[in-house]
Amino acid sequence: MLIRKIRELLYFEGFTIQGAKAKLTDRQFVKDATSEEAIKKAQAELPLDASQPGAPSGEDLSNFKNQLNDILKILK
Image (tube, rainbow, N blue to C red; front, side):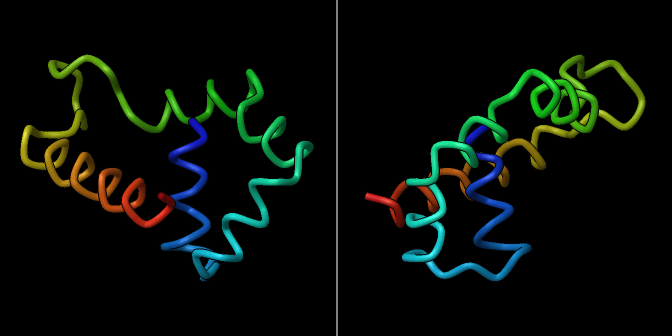
């Protein structure tokens, strides 16, 4: 769930890489981002069963995986 929050910071909230790194040093922020409530919300937004209506396609998942890999490269 933390990777998802990093993605939000970079792509949707306009943080720079340095700004996102700084935000991740805030223990309360990390605690909130990985809370049980945040995990449940994220799971509700992304169906895990491919047979469910609205579940992401293989192409969507591949694109998401590529985006996450790009974020990991940036943060290293």
